[in-house]
View (cartoon, rainbow, N blue to C red):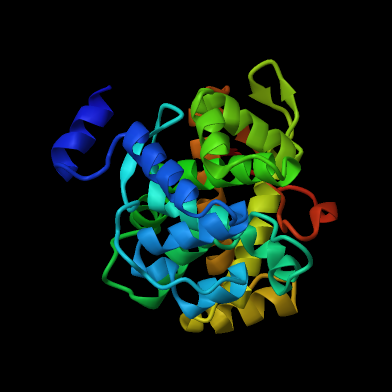
Length: 297
């Protein structure tokens, strides 16, 4: 409740409560009665922020949408968790199936890159490419892969799963269904279905496997990113050989810190037991075994 009061104070008269945002989406749907959920969501991307309406977003979603206004660029309580709602809409637009077979169906795997992996990777990019602007990678992760970003990412993954399984459901109804359940339940479902996480009571029993998947996917994002020029040489060293080099060790440490930052969000927000475990030496080569030290999440 205090988060909502703070948000209302900070944003003034803008749409910061869930009911107002949901009503806007319902009205938008009513004004476009013959439009698919895929198109509705991508049109709503025009009400987030200019950075979500670039050519890159047109390519990955298969839908060109110009920026209109920032009506949905808000932080609000969504399923009980403070969430960047504009980020949610943008991430969701890349994860909903298009009607029929479209080019973006072949780029569906970008869904991770336009959500959690992209957030982690972008934080690493910004920290390494602009030294001095950020004091630490932790600061970069807290700013560019924040809790409200990750709650948006998990909401996008969950809502897209609902929509892709039920082609008749409206976006507003899928959003309302998500909002009706506590965020901690969504986090646990996300861990189980996206990462094949295994629980024993409230303890994640295969954390090293989950961490390796996060690290691998974030690295894949960095390989594809056009903004990672300062990291290219580091990544070349990383991919060419498994033996230790200064560049490879630095990037490996960044990726591990980024993955643990995300895991910490999942463990905390899922009300799970805090973890200490040994991550794999090389996430792409688990047969090499784990490191000889423990990390926390």
